Image (cartoon, rainbow, N blue to C red; front, side, top):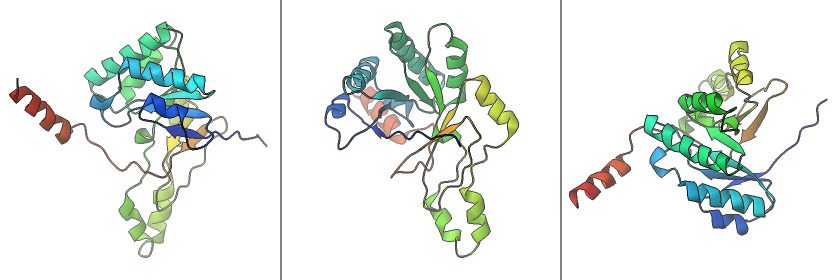
Length: 212
């Protein structure tokens, strides 16, 4: 059968962490998955890519669920990186961002898109494990990731998406990737839910405005 290559990746919050990692890794993950207001600046992403290259690792940029404002910011970062000859993987969590990346890929954003775990429709709520003694079949269903529809796979292929990301929840994971597709598994933390509204950011913004 097909020989499977396994990579080991690590997420870092600061570029300097790439120089002092607790083990051997093949890839650096850097960016922000959940909050567009926490997306790092172009300079920080540039520094993280340089750190990955200095340490012989590949680079993946995490991007969050975005509003139009967030999409514009991410595209600006990708365009500026591409203008400097910097490319890699971009893990997207927003279909609107994918549309823009796909449209511009042949022009000035030659990054490889990866389907983020916020979009793989995985059931990962921690209370799911409580069903195991009551409804075992429900847990079996919750383990499955619904990626087998031919139309969806065609959609991904047309956009050159051949890797998708998954969590490893308490109740387990049952995913069967079609030939030609690859998966990434996060551990130990699991994505459960998110919101476009961030009360922490809104509170800080109101405080900043009141102090002006």
